[in-house]
Image 1 (cartoon, helix red, strand yellow):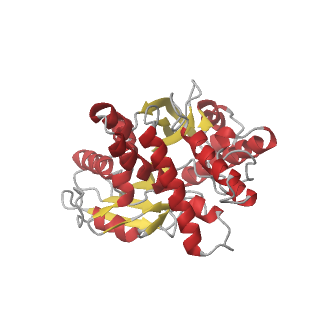
Image 2 (image 1 turned 90 degrees about the horizontal axis):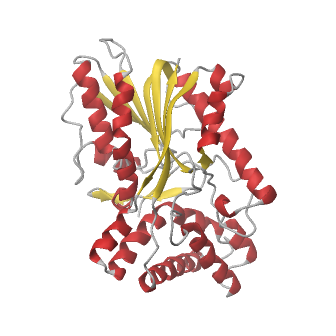
Image 3 (image 1 turned 60 degrees about the vertical axis):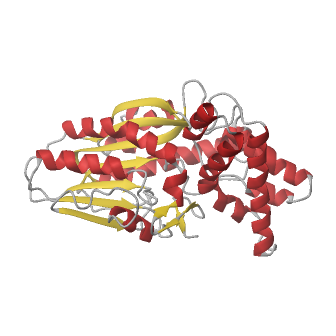
Length: 372
């Protein structure tokens, strides 16, 4: 299996092969969230001057993974640009970390998979990739017209600390939570300042970031079983059984933080902030919940085994590498693999035996940001 890295060091998404991608096929919900954002992208384009220009219209997809989940949105966007600027060159820059599986990305974009690509439907189109995370500047200053990112910027640039009694910041408290809050604040500012440098005047960012919404909901916690508490429950049971050590348990801490709507908005409301001074303005922010497609299907078909075997891979696609790296390197690789398999088998069996309430509903903040 190929691996593709996301943003924080050591984070890897499950990759794929020439005919498809494990990641995109497993993360149908991520595509649903991006499709829901497409109208915001088109509205942002409506507010932009796309008059004929020898300078290419440049769009970025930051944290692109294999490009499959955003393929339809990118296709819709470039066709909308082409309709308004018939002869203007269009450039699409896919960006992710160096470990990303760009072979899968280019196979998808260039139509060598089962995905229906846009590549042959638009002329004067140039597609490239940059092995650069969004914690650095990706394109030259004042060249980016439209920046896009979905379900990616919750990955922190580094893990500020391990959490002593949970695997995620949503279960942290005290100084451990404070460390994640501060890391989240700094990383959000860093991301925005790099985008401010890249954007042309009048350019837009459309960002879909995991969040904690006004009702306290977040990914996998919208009623029923709390997904992150379930993660923690299983690893805690492995600790209690002596399958893993205390050090390994705390190393399972995920390097993620979910900002609230207020935390996302803060840099734009303070006129003295570096983000505001760089010219960025928040035009739109709202929170939305996109239902877990696997739980929705289960409500229709009622087959618990089918639900479990389709649901667990979408979780595994984004957290397996973190959990594997949390295990001691003093263990043989095969032993570490066996523990990981036992973890997901345990989770799968839990869902089979009591499927009600399990699911990974997506909770995002949908934002449109302008550079003035």
